[in-house]
Length: 515
Image (cartoon, rainbow, N blue to C red; front, side, top):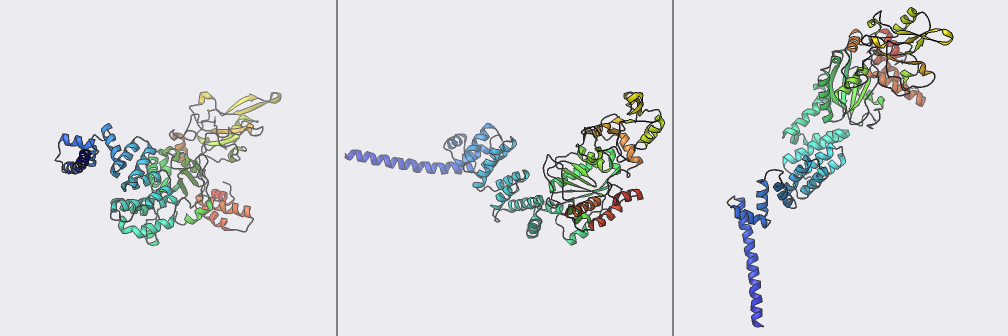
């Protein structure tokens, strides 16, 4: 019994000695590896013992993103924030975003604060602004300048994207000096001034007033810094096209996303409360305005262009052509105003909506048709636009259209514009265009037809849209009709719209609301 007790005591002492030596061995190996005085055997043993220093050394000396690198990273990521962060970057590169978010959140729990910026940036890019703000809110002001300035920069960008004017002002006022410390912060402040985000009266005086250099001037707006930069790229792209000679752009500007109460459905044409444009009109010195929103269908409403951040330079050019007086050559909605009746006068550069058949002497019918075409003078005398067909009781009718054998000429060719309208009345008329081939007015990616450039060179003002002031006048007038209230504000905006016109006929058209 006594011997048994002695043996048990010896075993306990031996175990304690081994544990104590193991503890000192781990410290010893850690010190050797940190000082880079270890050998291969020591490193291998230390890795097997899950020595953190050995794992970190082996991980950082592995080929990045190799199987070995990934194995060490996963072992370390449970306790080491940097490893968790690098794992997130790895999965981001593979577009495995759920895993990326998981490891970023793990890194944040391990107080690796670069991960907070990365996760907030990810949510910001996905328009999940509240999630991004929640991540940033957890950061302490005691963090390193790089982290804090990145967080402030991101918070300002979120406020800009949300149209939170008060928050923009509050952040930039409190942290202006801190933002000046780093390049990212300085660039943000430069962009804010450049795009006129939250300028005070003193700063506004420093902004050079745009002086239009052409008759069809456009001021484009966007609702965040990313889209403003994209707008600039689209304008540069537009300037390589032939249509550029008829348009000039004011420097792009910021507009809060909530300023106009716009729809934001990607599958529906963008619509906004156009009364709100009057708050911006005093600072706009162009005939037309345009607004890029994050989502929504591109369209032109009178003097205002709407489009979204997914639209290309081809889409922008297509929409600008509408401002210049061109109508779509693809099928318009069934209730489109231009497809309800044959036209009484020319309304577009490229489209005329006319009856399909006519009675009378061929020369007289031809002369009356030519008066309804913006491109009449380009049609040669020997290019047919009428063909005889048999009518009721043996009468002769003239069918409108240029035969296929003259497809290379300027003439009168069927357009799809009003094909969506099908009833007994409207089947008697249709839309015609000047050229037989497909154009940019039907397919965005096609170049702007040279003949259409010729039309603009001949007359770039007759069929164009009225200035955006007309939209404001119309919005006021509609309010009067709907609310049956006495409101003469629309008259003031009509007068402003008139001032942008170049002749009495156009001015009268504005006064009578004939657009």
